[in-house]
Length: 240
Image (cartoon, rainbow, N blue to C red; front, top):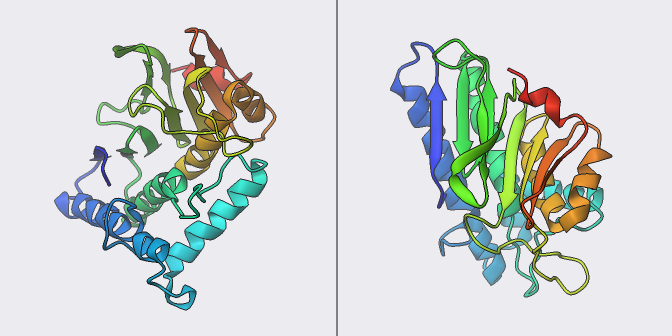
């Protein structure tokens, strides 16, 4: 998927379940990667695949993308300026959530799945403690500025400090976002966190206000001036 993926599964489940999770991620990559010429999304963007031949997974992701666009007032939009579709901003969280489902259906209650900084965990780590997630200092990747304990919730971070400027305001002139550098969202699961993290980041300074007034979401934003601002309920996830 063009990003590091970590799978940590508790219990005596053997390596087969881990292999199944990675096979699923490879499947998602083959279908949704905009960097592969043989993917389904690339075929759609070339006009080589009729709508009637689109997969059920593709239709599901596109429907969820449309729902998210409506819920965010247009700040989440997978349609690019050239008319092509790029569902990358929603597929990652969707795929992690589905991978977590594979693990849970196998009867495993303690696990941690992370892909490109987006995380879904359940239960406890091998030390018998709640899983914890560190938020990096966007100005110093070696420093952790906040530790959160998701306790079954999903965590997703959008930012420009790793991949550079890649999130733009889809409304108006589509300018790049410069006033914030990192935004972490905690949601009911990683899919909810991921889709709203992308949109909230595109809102710039207003993103943290959007998270504050949206039920089920908490957030932590770091501005380009180095100042961090949490939502009112974020602190509850920072208590061990």
